[in-house]
Amino acid sequence: MKLAAVKPVSRVLARELAVTALLLAGVSVVVFAILYLAPGDPLHALGVREALGVPRTWHGQYTAWFGRVVQGDFGNSIRTGLPVLPELARVGVNTLYLTLGALALTLAIAVPIAVHAAVHGDTAGNTAATIGAYILSAVPVFWFGYIVVYVFIHQFGMFPLISGTAAKQQHAWLYFLVPIFVLGTASGTLAEMIRHLREELSRVLAEDYIRTARAKGAPVWRHAFKEGFLIPVTEIMSAKIPFLLGGAVIVEQVFNWPGMGRMAWQAAQDRDFPVIMGIALVAAAFVRSGNLLQRVVFTAVNPRASKE
Amino acid sequence: MRYEQADNLPQLPLLQRADALDLLYVSYGLLIVGLVFASYLMGAFGWLPHDPRAMNVALINAAPFTPGHLLGTDFLGRDLQSRLILGIQAYFIPGLLAIAISIVGGSVLGILAGYRGGSLETLVTYFANLVDSFPRLVLILLVIAAFKPDIYYVMVVVGITGMPVIANLVAGKIAFLRQKSFIEAAHALGLPAHTVILKHILWFNCRAALVIQATLGMAEAILIETSLSYLGFGVQEPTPSWGNMVQAGANYFLQGNFWPSTAPAAAILATILGFQLLGDGLNNLLEGKRRR
Image (tube, rainbow over all chains, first blue to last red; front, side, top):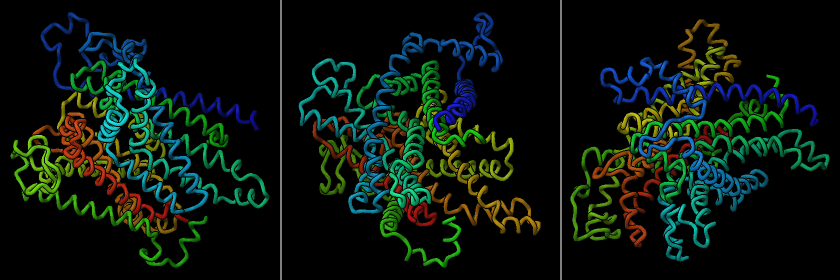
């Protein structure tokens, strides 16, 4: 069983890696095209372009830019003059913590509700929980952030809460967890996550092979786990990463969290092209790797999928 | 297989077989849609209780039910009720534009992928994956950095990013319907392809799904618009938008003046919830996804 699954996974991995590379190349073209079409050209003056050796055609400019990006040179920020990539690596880690932490928290809330609803059908308890999740998902995350800040300042006397970097005092871990809590509960993904997990699990639980397993007295959970739980969970996780990254832009703004989202906000404000291009590329790479991981899990669980 | 059998059974009228909870979702959603539309018209024709720009420094951050100001006032003493109603202008037409782009573009892509298939399908899949690679807000910030556009151009981007979902849905429907005998019969009768696609596939078999996607798309558009104007990229003061109202009120939030920021936040909550519940409720009622 295990051995049979190994070969297809490597084959699918190779194919998916190729697809990912192709998509990232497409992402770079889109990012470049948007900023290429932007009005205003700092090198407009006659002869400056030739003097600096900047290619004139769009494909010349793209190849030159893409060549540097592949070598890890994302250019220098217009605002600070610092190279973009090391800055991105520094703040990207914070965003990674924030989004992955929030994803884990959302799952921790969604999974029990979804499993309970799929196994027991509609009960008063899980219907209330589902409606609660709908309401929580519609709460504007910026406003929820203020509520949490207010409660922490006035109830627990924690001040200044709005600062990720100054958190060198006691309770530093708490400063760290509060934004994760806010993004994880109110990012708007919760209701959809519950819905997807519940639908998939109850679909699988209604299958004939589960009925057979139940009739035989075999453990139902073990038979339903891969198809009814593992695959939907990885699916929804990879589908929600872009959404959480978008939510991170707002939460980082509310909590002054030194991450990529705040940097993106600042860059959009200043029209800092190298920075916003770098952020878009890194964010897309993050989304694609989540997707890659999901495809690998899917194939490992379901080797038939590789034979299409 | 389960579904095929169920299709042949005589069905009860929709309202009788509907789940009470779904009906509740849909009626709440319809109530919100009605309120939003009515408020949009009120804002468009200027039927407001107060001038939304008239300041009254003697009465700032007033609580709800203050005489003359049903929902209180903001930090400049402007009437919150009027500003909330006018704030709908910021997303209503732009949101409809985003939905229209998603639905038309997504349907075209879905038809190309599902009906023609082959390399076109690969191309559409590639496009969909490409669009899905970007976090929507990051893509919008990129466009904002490049063009400093107004909300309509932003909503074009939102519309384009909404296309893959619709394309997938339509392509899936077509793949399912192709094998059905009524489509074969339509072809055998010599009906032109556009009649089969537009009438028999899109109109008769996809319209419920498309309406559902439209309501969910409106929830997305409102979320994007309010987030952007909260971040300072959307509608600018003194023109009200729910997002910039939350932001403006937030300065007084930590002093305990919750209301000026909470009123627009509650409006956002109630509205997004309404569109989402309407979409999901209709989905359960018409498409019968969840309950078996």
